Image 1: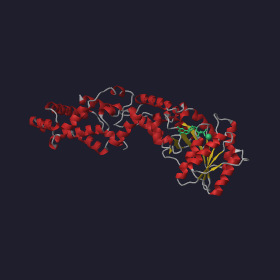
Image 2: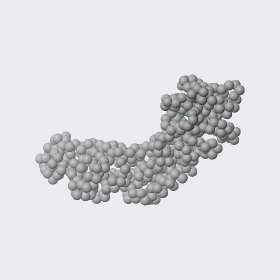
Image 3: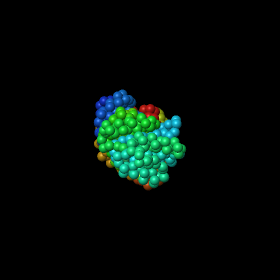
Length: 440
Ligand code: GDP
Ligand code: MG
């Protein structure tokens, strides 16, 4: 029956006291797998999970969540914190032009990102100048020249004598000074693997240019490898920010967490396509949700956070204590559940962890749900306030008004009676007394 189902829902979505090693275990395991699947480096996963475990242990479980959901919420919040609570911007030099070095492995998206950044900056009131110092691959320099032309952004193409990266870059900066360009974007050469030659070359460039930003371009699809190269680039050059490319693919972007964890440097931009406008500022909250996956659980948590009305919750609690839970409240409760989505989709959103697993198979009759609300809607305020008033003739009238039968009305009143009992026995139901601690 509906009340059975409701009872199970109430039981399962309310909190269970404090988070313990035991009631967190399943959720932590799931999260660990999720992070590894998102290509977060295993060492980073280990460190991160230990931090979360310590933080979560002993925390009170909010009454709207199961321990598993609460742990996931803590993890999401922690991910956001680690990834950076605000979106970073590019820093500019006190004395223009600002030099931005774009570095990374071959194929990570340096040239594409240089073009995108130039476009982004010029849309934001800057006057960038592009230069490619990839002297080993003429095609690479050509690629940037074509991009620059398409975007209508000037590029320093060098003289035949300028065969060294440092010479090219120096001349480009001089050119920027002369032509009043306030930013120089230096697209550097990459290698398939990190090697000594590349690092030496990049160090020399850094020395000669004194760049304000050294942006490390990481391919989100490379996952685990990103850590090693980010670490190496940071050790040798001191990167100041990260551009995570190819996030338009299915990569969950675990590299973001790994790189942030290893280098401590902020993610600044995300590449979301091959075209020049496919560049976005990095948003820690979006990235956290994507890394964690579990979109269904997260949207459940967000829905609860936004749907549950704190004032109502307190009111309801008081009513329960004063044994003043009316049919009107019963309907409000149902509607509150409704706001969270249909009961069925609510159950569908539960994570497949622990005890919630079995709940996934519970089928809820949507019609029954609608019928109950319709019946209560057909009652007068007085009747809703005091169910004892509802005698035989009133039942017939209500049935007629709601397009149901007297039998349906009888059933509802029975369910309401059961719900009253159930609500009293549940110390803090969906709208329980711990609700006050839920940040809205
Ligand atoms: P570089 O060797 O580091 O300069 O890499 P490129 O800029 O030449 O990019 C390598 C390949 O990745 C090219 O085919 C780009 O079109 C592609 N690419 C770069 N960024 C993105 C992105 O954000 N999304 C997608 N889908 N492809 C990208
Ligand atoms: Mg390139």
